[in-house]
Image (cartoon, rainbow, N blue to C red; front, side, top):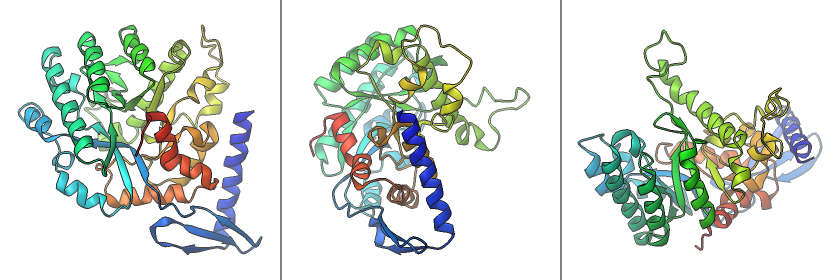
Length: 363
Protein backbone atom coordinates (compact mmCIF):
# COMPACT_ATOMS: atom_id res chain seq x y z
CA UNK A 1 0.00 0.00 0.00
CA UNK A 2 2.76 2.44 0.94
CA UNK A 3 4.57 1.66 -2.27
CA UNK A 4 1.46 2.39 -4.33
CA UNK A 5 0.95 5.69 -2.51
CA UNK A 6 4.57 6.61 -3.14
CA UNK A 7 4.30 5.63 -6.78
CA UNK A 8 1.25 7.86 -7.20
CA UNK A 9 3.15 10.77 -5.63
CA UNK A 10 6.04 10.25 -8.03
CA UNK A 11 3.77 9.99 -11.09
CA UNK A 12 1.98 13.14 -9.99
CA UNK A 13 5.35 14.86 -9.84
CA UNK A 14 6.18 13.80 -13.39
CA UNK A 15 2.89 15.28 -14.55
CA UNK A 16 3.80 18.52 -12.81
CA UNK A 17 7.08 18.61 -14.73
CA UNK A 18 5.15 18.42 -18.00
CA UNK A 19 2.93 21.28 -16.86
CA UNK A 20 6.03 23.25 -16.00
CA UNK A 21 7.46 22.88 -19.50
CA UNK A 22 4.14 23.92 -21.00
CA UNK A 23 4.12 27.31 -19.34
CA UNK A 24 4.71 27.36 -15.62
CA UNK A 25 5.46 30.77 -14.18
CA UNK A 26 8.12 30.98 -11.48
CA UNK A 27 8.37 33.82 -9.04
CA UNK A 28 11.61 33.42 -7.10
CA UNK A 29 12.16 34.62 -3.55
CA UNK A 30 15.92 34.61 -3.18
CA UNK A 31 17.45 31.38 -1.91
CA UNK A 32 14.41 30.55 0.24
CA UNK A 33 12.29 29.20 -2.58
CA UNK A 34 9.47 30.22 -4.84
CA UNK A 35 5.80 29.96 -5.54
CA UNK A 36 4.58 28.23 -8.64
CA UNK A 37 1.51 29.53 -10.49
CA UNK A 38 0.26 27.13 -13.11
CA UNK A 39 -1.32 29.20 -15.88
CA UNK A 40 -3.27 26.29 -17.34
CA UNK A 41 -5.07 25.37 -14.10
CA UNK A 42 -4.92 28.59 -12.12
CA UNK A 43 -3.51 26.71 -9.13
CA UNK A 44 -1.02 28.26 -6.75
CA UNK A 45 1.27 25.76 -5.04
CA UNK A 46 3.50 26.71 -2.12
CA UNK A 47 6.69 24.77 -2.75
CA UNK A 48 9.27 25.86 -0.22
CA UNK A 49 7.49 27.98 2.38
CA UNK A 50 9.42 30.35 4.61
CA UNK A 51 12.13 28.15 6.04
CA UNK A 52 13.89 30.66 8.25
CA UNK A 53 14.69 28.02 10.86
CA UNK A 54 17.86 25.96 11.00
CA UNK A 55 18.72 23.36 8.37
CA UNK A 56 20.72 20.36 9.62
CA UNK A 57 23.21 19.05 7.08
CA UNK A 58 23.44 15.40 8.05
CA UNK A 59 26.43 14.36 5.90
CA UNK A 60 29.43 16.71 5.80
CA UNK A 61 33.09 15.82 5.96
CA UNK A 62 36.00 17.09 8.02
CA UNK A 63 39.55 16.23 9.05
CA UNK A 64 40.44 17.76 12.44
CA UNK A 65 43.83 19.45 12.27
CA UNK A 66 45.56 17.07 14.69
CA UNK A 67 44.26 14.13 12.70
CA UNK A 68 45.44 15.69 9.43
CA UNK A 69 48.87 16.32 10.96
CA UNK A 70 49.12 12.73 12.25
CA UNK A 71 48.17 11.40 8.86
CA UNK A 72 50.37 13.66 6.75
CA UNK A 73 53.21 11.20 6.30
CA UNK A 74 50.89 8.26 5.60
CA UNK A 75 48.13 9.68 3.42
CA UNK A 76 47.96 13.48 2.91
CA UNK A 77 44.56 15.00 3.67
CA UNK A 78 42.72 17.44 1.41
CA UNK A 79 43.16 20.87 3.00
CA UNK A 80 39.47 21.64 2.36
CA UNK A 81 38.71 19.16 5.13
CA UNK A 82 40.89 20.76 7.80
CA UNK A 83 40.82 24.53 7.18
CA UNK A 84 38.12 25.88 9.48
CA UNK A 85 38.50 29.51 8.40
CA UNK A 86 37.67 28.59 4.80
CA UNK A 87 34.87 26.35 5.99
CA UNK A 88 33.22 29.09 8.02
CA UNK A 89 33.53 31.61 5.19
CA UNK A 90 31.66 29.23 2.92
CA UNK A 91 29.07 28.33 5.54
CA UNK A 92 28.30 32.02 6.03
CA UNK A 93 26.98 32.08 2.46
CA UNK A 94 24.42 29.35 3.18
CA UNK A 95 22.24 30.83 5.92
CA UNK A 96 21.22 29.04 9.10
CA UNK A 97 22.84 25.63 8.67
CA UNK A 98 24.22 23.31 11.34
CA UNK A 99 26.50 20.56 10.10
CA UNK A 100 26.86 17.01 11.33
CA UNK A 101 30.49 15.98 10.88
CA UNK A 102 31.92 12.74 9.54
CA UNK A 103 35.59 11.98 9.04
CA UNK A 104 36.64 12.67 5.45
CA UNK A 105 39.27 10.93 3.37
CA UNK A 106 40.19 7.28 3.13
CA UNK A 107 38.90 4.77 5.70
CA UNK A 108 41.26 4.50 8.65
CA UNK A 109 41.46 0.73 8.25
CA UNK A 110 42.76 1.20 4.68
CA UNK A 111 45.69 3.38 5.67
CA UNK A 112 46.88 2.02 9.01
CA UNK A 113 47.53 -1.31 10.70
CA UNK A 114 45.15 -2.40 13.51
CA UNK A 115 47.24 -0.82 16.26
CA UNK A 116 47.85 2.52 14.54
CA UNK A 117 44.23 2.65 13.38
CA UNK A 118 43.08 2.79 17.01
CA UNK A 119 45.28 5.81 17.70
CA UNK A 120 44.11 7.61 14.57
CA UNK A 121 40.45 6.99 15.39
CA UNK A 122 40.89 8.45 18.86
CA UNK A 123 42.63 11.54 17.48
CA UNK A 124 39.89 12.03 14.89
CA UNK A 125 37.05 11.58 17.38
CA UNK A 126 38.64 13.86 19.95
CA UNK A 127 39.05 16.50 17.26
CA UNK A 128 35.46 16.29 16.02
CA UNK A 129 34.09 16.38 19.57
CA UNK A 130 36.18 19.46 20.30
CA UNK A 131 34.82 21.20 17.20
CA UNK A 132 31.21 20.46 18.17
CA UNK A 133 31.80 21.78 21.70
CA UNK A 134 33.70 24.87 20.58
CA UNK A 135 31.39 25.85 17.73
CA UNK A 136 27.83 24.85 18.66
CA UNK A 137 26.47 27.49 16.28
CA UNK A 138 28.20 25.66 13.41
CA UNK A 139 28.09 21.97 14.27
CA UNK A 140 25.14 19.96 15.55
CA UNK A 141 27.09 16.78 16.19
CA UNK A 142 29.49 14.24 14.72
CA UNK A 143 29.74 10.57 13.83
CA UNK A 144 32.64 8.63 15.28
CA UNK A 145 35.36 7.03 13.18
CA UNK A 146 36.25 3.49 14.18
CA UNK A 147 39.27 1.21 13.58
CA UNK A 148 37.22 -1.35 11.68
CA UNK A 149 40.24 -3.64 11.24
CA UNK A 150 40.34 -4.09 15.04
CA UNK A 151 36.79 -4.85 16.19
CA UNK A 152 37.54 -5.30 19.89
CA UNK A 153 39.13 -1.86 19.95
CA UNK A 154 36.38 -0.46 17.72
CA UNK A 155 33.69 -1.44 20.23
CA UNK A 156 35.63 0.18 23.06
CA UNK A 157 36.14 3.33 21.02
CA UNK A 158 32.44 3.40 20.19
CA UNK A 159 31.63 3.41 23.91
CA UNK A 160 34.12 6.19 24.55
CA UNK A 161 32.95 8.27 21.59
CA UNK A 162 29.32 8.16 22.68
CA UNK A 163 29.59 8.18 26.48
CA UNK A 164 32.55 10.53 26.92
CA UNK A 165 32.61 12.58 23.71
CA UNK A 166 28.83 12.61 23.12
CA UNK A 167 29.10 11.77 19.43
CA UNK A 168 25.91 10.79 17.63
CA UNK A 169 26.77 7.45 16.04
CA UNK A 170 29.47 6.05 13.77
CA UNK A 171 30.51 6.12 10.14
CA UNK A 172 31.45 2.99 8.21
CA UNK A 173 32.20 2.42 4.55
CA UNK A 174 30.34 0.16 2.13
CA UNK A 175 33.12 -2.39 2.47
CA UNK A 176 35.75 -2.93 5.14
CA UNK A 177 39.04 -4.19 3.76
CA UNK A 178 36.98 -5.71 0.92
CA UNK A 179 34.56 -7.42 3.35
CA UNK A 180 30.81 -6.77 3.01
CA UNK A 181 28.92 -5.10 5.84
CA UNK A 182 26.89 -8.23 6.59
CA UNK A 183 30.04 -10.12 7.62
CA UNK A 184 29.59 -11.86 11.01
CA UNK A 185 32.43 -9.92 12.65
CA UNK A 186 30.43 -6.68 12.40
CA UNK A 187 27.35 -7.97 14.23
CA UNK A 188 28.60 -6.85 17.68
CA UNK A 189 28.89 -3.31 16.33
CA UNK A 190 25.28 -3.37 15.12
CA UNK A 191 24.08 -4.76 18.42
CA UNK A 192 25.88 -2.09 20.42
CA UNK A 193 24.82 0.90 18.29
CA UNK A 194 21.24 -0.38 18.43
CA UNK A 195 21.39 -0.30 22.20
CA UNK A 196 22.51 3.32 22.04
CA UNK A 197 19.59 4.15 19.72
CA UNK A 198 21.89 6.09 17.40
CA UNK A 199 22.78 5.81 13.71
CA UNK A 200 25.38 4.36 11.38
CA UNK A 201 26.40 6.53 8.44
CA UNK A 202 27.34 4.49 5.35
CA UNK A 203 29.81 6.16 3.01
CA UNK A 204 30.41 4.58 -0.42
CA UNK A 205 33.78 3.16 -1.36
CA UNK A 206 35.00 1.76 -4.66
CA UNK A 207 38.35 0.21 -5.42
CA UNK A 208 40.33 1.35 -8.43
CA UNK A 209 42.26 -1.93 -8.40
CA UNK A 210 39.00 -3.78 -9.09
CA UNK A 211 37.85 -2.34 -12.43
CA UNK A 212 34.51 -3.33 -13.90
CA UNK A 213 36.22 -4.54 -17.08
CA UNK A 214 39.16 -6.89 -16.36
CA UNK A 215 41.18 -5.47 -19.26
CA UNK A 216 41.13 -1.97 -17.73
CA UNK A 217 43.82 -0.59 -15.49
CA UNK A 218 42.01 1.30 -12.74
CA UNK A 219 38.84 3.34 -13.12
CA UNK A 220 38.52 5.13 -16.45
CA UNK A 221 37.24 8.72 -16.29
CA UNK A 222 36.59 8.37 -12.56
CA UNK A 223 33.71 5.96 -13.26
CA UNK A 224 34.55 4.23 -9.98
CA UNK A 225 33.33 7.36 -8.22
CA UNK A 226 30.60 8.60 -10.56
CA UNK A 227 28.89 5.23 -11.06
CA UNK A 228 30.73 2.97 -8.64
CA UNK A 229 29.82 4.81 -5.46
CA UNK A 230 26.02 4.67 -5.89
CA UNK A 231 26.43 1.03 -6.91
CA UNK A 232 28.50 0.34 -3.78
CA UNK A 233 25.83 1.95 -1.61
CA UNK A 234 23.11 -0.11 -3.28
CA UNK A 235 25.06 -3.34 -2.86
CA UNK A 236 25.74 -2.63 0.83
CA UNK A 237 22.04 -1.94 1.42
CA UNK A 238 21.06 -5.15 -0.37
CA UNK A 239 23.55 -7.24 1.60
CA UNK A 240 22.36 -5.83 4.93
CA UNK A 241 18.69 -6.29 4.04
CA UNK A 242 19.01 -9.72 2.42
CA UNK A 243 21.05 -11.11 5.33
CA UNK A 244 18.38 -10.10 7.82
CA UNK A 245 20.51 -7.62 9.76
CA UNK A 246 17.64 -5.14 10.05
CA UNK A 247 15.34 -7.92 11.26
CA UNK A 248 17.86 -9.14 13.81
CA UNK A 249 18.40 -5.59 15.12
CA UNK A 250 15.07 -3.79 14.67
CA UNK A 251 16.37 -0.62 16.33
CA UNK A 252 19.28 -0.34 13.90
CA UNK A 253 19.37 2.88 11.84
CA UNK A 254 21.49 3.39 8.72
CA UNK A 255 22.03 6.69 6.89
CA UNK A 256 23.05 6.38 3.26
CA UNK A 257 24.87 8.91 1.12
CA UNK A 258 23.55 10.01 -2.29
CA UNK A 259 19.87 9.24 -1.70
CA UNK A 260 20.12 5.49 -1.30
CA UNK A 261 22.15 4.89 -4.45
CA UNK A 262 20.05 3.13 -7.08
CA UNK A 263 17.73 1.33 -4.67
CA UNK A 264 14.73 3.71 -5.00
CA UNK A 265 14.97 3.61 -8.81
CA UNK A 266 15.21 -0.19 -8.89
CA UNK A 267 12.61 -0.84 -6.19
CA UNK A 268 10.13 -2.73 -8.36
CA UNK A 269 12.90 -4.83 -9.94
CA UNK A 270 14.05 -5.80 -6.46
CA UNK A 271 10.54 -6.45 -5.21
CA UNK A 272 9.71 -8.79 -8.09
CA UNK A 273 13.13 -10.46 -8.32
CA UNK A 274 13.02 -14.27 -8.66
CA UNK A 275 15.35 -14.64 -5.69
CA UNK A 276 13.50 -15.80 -2.58
CA UNK A 277 15.95 -14.18 -0.14
CA UNK A 278 15.74 -17.22 2.11
CA UNK A 279 15.47 -16.77 5.86
CA UNK A 280 13.74 -13.40 5.90
CA UNK A 281 10.55 -12.91 7.87
CA UNK A 282 9.34 -10.10 5.60
CA UNK A 283 9.87 -8.99 1.98
CA UNK A 284 13.33 -7.51 1.42
CA UNK A 285 11.80 -4.33 0.02
CA UNK A 286 10.33 -3.55 3.44
CA UNK A 287 13.78 -3.65 5.05
CA UNK A 288 15.22 -1.46 2.29
CA UNK A 289 12.60 1.18 3.05
CA UNK A 290 13.97 1.46 6.60
CA UNK A 291 17.23 3.09 5.50
CA UNK A 292 17.52 6.85 5.90
CA UNK A 293 18.75 8.55 2.72
CA UNK A 294 20.40 11.94 2.33
CA UNK A 295 19.80 14.48 -0.44
CA UNK A 296 23.35 14.77 -1.83
CA UNK A 297 22.48 14.09 -5.48
CA UNK A 298 23.81 17.26 -7.13
CA UNK A 299 20.52 19.13 -7.02
CA UNK A 300 18.33 16.57 -8.79
CA UNK A 301 14.68 17.01 -7.81
CA UNK A 302 13.32 14.02 -9.80
CA UNK A 303 15.88 11.84 -8.00
CA UNK A 304 14.64 13.11 -4.64
CA UNK A 305 11.02 12.56 -5.66
CA UNK A 306 11.84 8.99 -6.67
CA UNK A 307 13.38 8.40 -3.22
CA UNK A 308 10.40 10.12 -1.62
CA UNK A 309 8.02 7.82 -3.45
CA UNK A 310 10.03 4.84 -2.22
CA UNK A 311 10.72 5.60 1.44
CA UNK A 312 8.64 8.70 2.26
CA UNK A 313 9.70 12.04 3.71
CA UNK A 314 10.25 10.52 7.16
CA UNK A 315 13.32 8.70 5.79
CA UNK A 316 14.91 11.59 3.88
CA UNK A 317 17.60 13.82 5.42
CA UNK A 318 19.11 17.05 4.18
CA UNK A 319 22.72 16.24 3.30
CA UNK A 320 25.14 17.95 0.90
CA UNK A 321 28.60 16.30 0.95
CA UNK A 322 30.15 19.63 2.02
CA UNK A 323 32.95 20.66 1.51
CA UNK A 324 33.49 18.15 -1.30
CA UNK A 325 30.37 19.77 -2.73
CA UNK A 326 31.17 23.45 -3.29
CA UNK A 327 28.90 26.36 -2.41
CA UNK A 328 27.11 26.35 -5.75
CA UNK A 329 26.44 22.63 -5.41
CA UNK A 330 25.08 23.05 -1.89
CA UNK A 331 22.74 25.78 -3.13
CA UNK A 332 21.56 23.45 -5.89
CA UNK A 333 20.82 20.78 -3.30
CA UNK A 334 18.75 23.27 -1.30
CA UNK A 335 16.97 24.40 -4.45
CA UNK A 336 16.19 20.79 -5.38
CA UNK A 337 14.50 20.23 -2.01
CA UNK A 338 12.58 23.50 -2.33
CA UNK A 339 11.29 22.31 -5.72
CA UNK A 340 9.96 19.00 -4.43
CA UNK A 341 6.19 18.71 -4.69
CA UNK A 342 5.61 17.83 -1.06
CA UNK A 343 3.96 19.53 1.89
CA UNK A 344 5.80 22.11 3.92
CA UNK A 345 5.55 19.76 6.89
CA UNK A 346 7.42 17.06 4.96
CA UNK A 347 9.99 19.58 3.71
CA UNK A 348 10.63 20.65 7.29
CA UNK A 349 11.14 16.99 8.19
CA UNK A 350 13.80 16.66 5.48
CA UNK A 351 15.59 19.87 6.41
CA UNK A 352 15.78 19.35 10.16
CA UNK A 353 13.05 17.48 12.02
CA UNK A 354 14.12 13.98 10.99
CA UNK A 355 17.72 14.67 12.01
CA UNK A 356 16.63 16.06 15.37
CA UNK A 357 14.60 12.95 16.06
CA UNK A 358 17.10 10.43 14.70
CA UNK A 359 20.14 11.83 16.52
CA UNK A 360 18.35 13.19 19.60
CA UNK A 361 19.58 16.70 18.85
CA UNK A 362 18.78 19.73 20.98
CA UNK A 363 19.85 22.91 19.20
